[in-house]
Image (tube, rainbow, N blue to C red):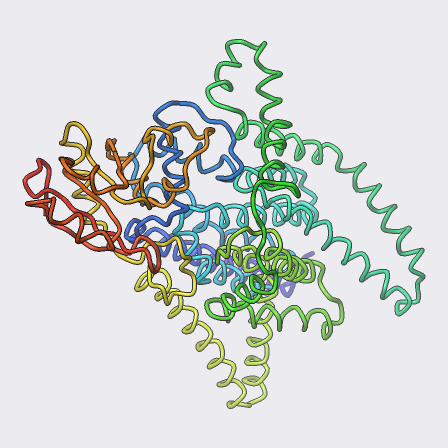
Length: 565
């Protein structure tokens, strides 16, 4: 016979779980709104533009081969599909990242067996509102994608262990596969996972004597446990490995060869080879130890830049994460593996990324922020517990202080999120703005340029000056050929001009400028006095093509068909 107290406890547990589930869903809905509202307002960053350009070329030709310099294939295949359905625009190009980033708070629910109710809710809120995650979820880059997929992979694996359901391991394999299709630094994630697991084992061996055991017996027990678990879970493990391999092969396989393979199975060995060994060779040649990518940066300089970014725009998560990790490790009676694992993961990311990154991109802190949210949730729970105990004991000052701390932390994060993602997303003073972000809002002028280019016949856009000059304008149509640096200096204009199917030309000397009749002329501001007298009837606008120091002038013929002013 079930007692009334047992039924009451069960009902209370169900009610608590329901409240936590509602909190997680609410955080997810807020996250989606934050990521999709005004998603196309910010002009494309250089990095968004170069990848977007190659996706447009892929859409136009149907040909795609993995190029490690523009990272994994996920955005290429997903955006090629989205462009075909909805058309290409700044907002549509960012949809996939915004959606994955917006759904990231749902990962908190997977950790409900390892975290208490307050920690699960706090984790969902951190994943929804953190300024770094919001900003780069509104950015067509792969960092939020790989971080999100990796967190879901860990969550699925943890939930599989805690519930005994092998299907979650298959989901973990698929999620980890998606992480590898997003960006090559998924390899770093895998290495960090192994290292964090080793530190967890080392912690058990180190504390064995305090528990009256020998480190050798503990090590032996762990080996035996691992053997039993592999034997019991071999089907689920095999399913996870298969899911991982299938996702990786499908995404990395060249197009249109993958589709042709189904009609001609003899192509399968070559296609599968390109999707595996071929992709690895391309990756290693670009990002390996002897790669073509230069890494001459100062480690200390890049590390300090990362720490400065964390302090400037992710202060709440950073402080709460440090407090939560240290409290769980040194004050808790039984430190939790998940919290310690996430802390090691975050710390390793802070230390390692200044070594492997090739440019000072603030986006690299995404990889530390994602795992740091787990111990940060523990930090929030500590404050909540202190407030509850103070209130229960009649300590109004302590209870009020806890409430003030939580409100101040939330307000600080909200203000920083509003500034970085909405009120000043292109401003040089924004701690998340990287040099390749145009400092000016030039959407209206770019719309006019597209309108004129679509209506014009012949050369649509003429670039003047050695900074933009290219001898062969068609070279960028072939991504595997060497592309002159001057083409990249035109970014992000290339993306907008390709969307308009604009025909471009360029010249480096004043003599070549004579007789130009293109309805649009673009040059550096320093050439204004040279160009302006030759363009009678043209209106001009001045913009910053980077966050600072690259000022251009865009001239548009007011009499050109399609001119909107």
